[in-house]
Length: 328
Image 1: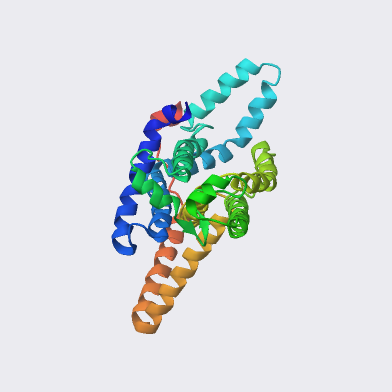
Image 2: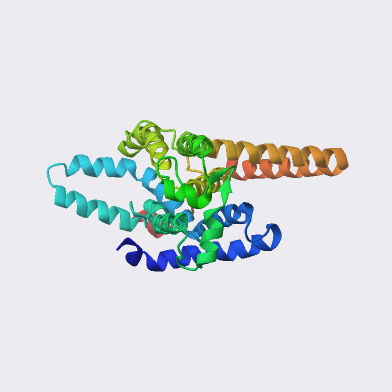
């Protein structure tokens, strides 16, 4: 039933995965674990690269939502006894400002089907069955692929004797050790990703309470534990997908914090400090290369500023009035 519903996603996921496997198979060999590991990593990169426009909209929506918090608070206070009117006014506020509370969730929602598609692909691979764009031969090859000795198609909690026999695995110790280490790395990276965004890209003005930020702080500490348990239940290949996703997210957030931070945030202060330091370095380089040109430039800037001050200090001449106007 699930495979029928997810059939297009399973085909798309397995097709992209096989394209990358063919590319890396030409280098490392089609039956090598490296080609299958890299195919999952680059499957993740392909999906995330295709979602860059949505990520930009997500960041813009999150910034707009933070800017609108004072107005949202005012509406909630004004219409606290009329929920219907409150919803209407809030939707109007979102529309007038070109934002939506659902825009920040879109990248996560769109990633979920591909995550589920990979989960189903690896579930079939663990049994050696053909699935999507993977033939039975491809599936058997992927079945024997491993990441530091842990089979990509098995998980910490789910590994039946028949699956282990098909792979030729006699002990699950190495599988469980690798699975636990990957789960800890994934949960930790999830925590650091959220903490970096909250610490650096949040408006520093705490004069207006922000319920959204309060809920994010709670999720910051609760969610990693859920992710830790979750990653022990899914295949090593899926955890590899999730870890690659977090690495990509950290890179995207680093770029965002440097180039388009939230106004009034610590990231914006850091960006302005970097720009000021860059201008000072350029001035120092100009002085070192051509002191005369630097003095001339400084003199021109100084005289321009004085001219502006002189113009602003000029006495405004009185407007001449005619005799007829004075009589009136």
